[in-house]
Length: 328
Image 1 (cartoon, rainbow, N blue to C red):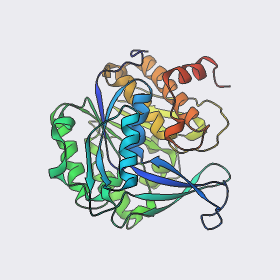
Image 2: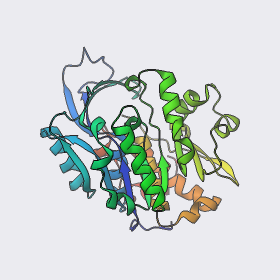
Image 3: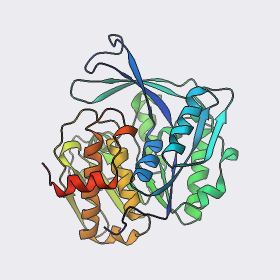
Image 4: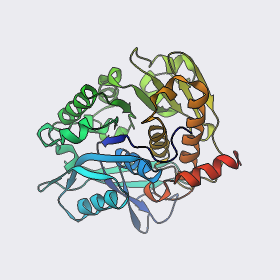
């Protein structure tokens, strides 16, 4: 590995952080759930913590409610070593909540409370531009594109990071219930597509964005754009496919006992970014990239073996143990 868990370049993650309320019993509807556990979440925040858990440096930029949940979430970031000087608090809006049903197969269904939540109200003027300019990698999703003023803040942050020479990393992280329509989701997710250097989509997102039910190279390459350095399609328990200008291929997954898939993709992304932040030449070296992606798949797999995203994010030692044990 190029980086021994001591990445020095800063990875800045932009977007939402919220609280997932997860039923104490799996495989029941929200109405039938006897109780809920609160689990901190939000994909960009999960990525930021995935990075620090692996020994990297990260910061989170976003807005939380000036309420107990908001301060709890900021505290969790700090406890995990994530720089928190990009966080704003909104006195008039609450921290976002999501009620998550875990189906019997570990997959999830969501019901969101955001009307509007604090993360949606981040303005471009509130951005910590010095922090964003210091990013070697700037990572974001698409939920922050849904409404103004957060959308304008997102576009500004991307522009500032790009101008300062950051690698732009995009994981659309589709949450259809939050969008006014599927058409709007597709349009807005694609509206910033050609700005990203690295894009990660799941197999489900690939189908959604292409309108094709085929998860093949042709379908994936229809999402390629000329400035892209790496396109990743994650396939759950089947691993991932990777595409660059010069080569493409696949990496197998690790077989583990899956309890909860929450945060697996964020763990995968955090691992990848931690490994390339100080050595972007990896993106042009297939053998090294495959090694990094195997490590990332191991991190994603470990995350599915425990409930909740953040408690399940692995350390480098845990990932290396799984790698050494092969795909058992």
